[in-house]
Amino acid sequence: SMTTQHHFAGEVFLDHIPPNYDASRKELIIRIFSTILLLVCLIPYVTTTVLKSRAFQRWKEESFLLEADNSKSKEQNRSSNNIKSKKSKKKKHNGSSSEEVEEELTEEEKEAKLREDFEEVYYEPHWSTVLIMPLLNLFCLCCVICLVFNSPNNIYAARAIFQAPMLSSAECEEVIAMAHRAAERNFKAAKNAGDDSDLTEETRKLLMDSPRGWKKDRHTRYPTTDLNVVVDPFLKEDRMYLEEKLSARLAPMIERVYGIVPGAIRANDMFIVRYDHDKQPNLNSHTDSSDVSFNILLNDAFEGGGTQFLHRPSGQTFSVHPEKGQGLVHTALLQHEGLAVTEGTRYILVGFLHIDYVDPFTGEPTGLSKFASWLSLPWLQVKMKDGYLAAHKRLKRQARGNLNTDYLGAAAENKKWTDHKYYRMMLRDIHDVASSFCDSWSPHFMASLVHRDNATDYLNALDLDYERSKETRDKSPVWFKGQQIEVDVDGSFTEGWKDRKHDSSKFEDL
Image 1 (tube, rainbow, N blue to C red):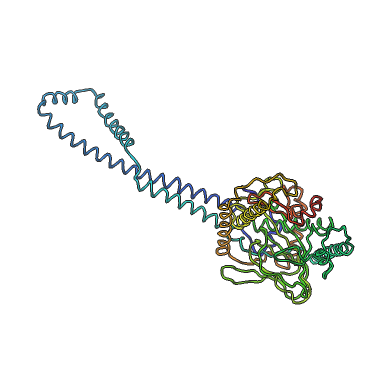
Image 2 (tube, rainbow, N blue to C red):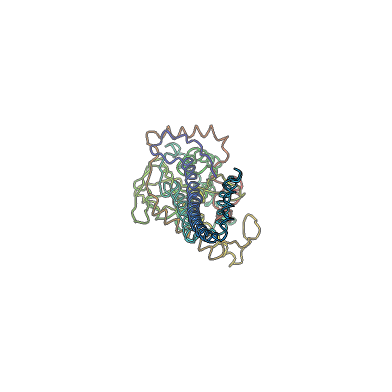
């Protein structure tokens, strides 16, 4: 599918120019069809035509030699009836011009008869049909795969980190303030919790501990001190504020650097994190459970910090230290870690974004290009992982006899083809191959898109364009309603996270 990109209002301020995805994809389609036309149609046709023509010439020469031998035999046999032969020749010489035409037509008929006989007995050479044509087809397939692998989504953007202004200084302060207000509400709820409260004693204790009101156990494997913008008590006005900023600034930037239409963007988790030098100063090396991740630095009153990225094949690392209000955007499976804060507290707004080919709840297409989905190795890597994990969890529920536990009230699941162990192994292997290719062949680099001196003008241009075009855009990103869910390899909904199941009413009201 070819979905035209919306004009990027901040183009004039870019110091680093990403590829034109529309033009690149059209050029790629032309190259793919040209390759197929050349290797599957043109070369085989020319080859078989030349071979057939040469075979026909040899057939003619052999037929003429055979005819000459037959003529000699006939000459020897004509001596017994010479008179009759002479009379026949005399008639030929004295005959009408119509007989000469007949003799001339006879030669043409001989040629046609010769070609008909040739067509009946001709067959393509064994080495041509068995060796050359299959090799051409295989070579064509390899060329198409190489062309697709060299698309911008697979080479340019697969392991790149993009840095750009996202929020002004005052807007950063507002986001921190709304987080503190939400944390205070959490603290009061924990402090006033009675016996009928749905808070566990462990959760209540963590909320009461410093920093009070902040969650400390929301992420299991890599816990952070954070607040989710849906589950935790942010106000509707807070989410509207974030939605407006992200839709105006982050979504167009993602469309520009990844060729992903805004309607395909769905935040699966969005939260505000704090790193305290005397509590949790850092986060160990990890990858994120999404397609694209972003983080926006909300303050600068700290020392240390930053994000360090790993080039897995070589083991080399490089760190990025954005300024206040700047955001980092990268594919989520790029290995990274949060560097330690040595003094003060570092606040960041983090989002894990899923890029959906179809809406996970309705199954409707989002308009995402196939070049950014099924033909994109980073996207394919995540979807293979989603399919593998979905099958694994289904099998675990089947083993527990707990199949009918879908909190949305869905009917009992039927066993899917991805539940078979060989298909699960295939999904895992495709994931590993895609990951290895991107790690090895895609350049790892950091691109600063906009100079600091142009940050304000850049943000104003994006805001103005958003106000002008938001009524005419087909689909918008889903920042809150689609959070905390698991999807299958086909993009369909499988189950919600524990917090979503527990606080499902908060998502229904969005």
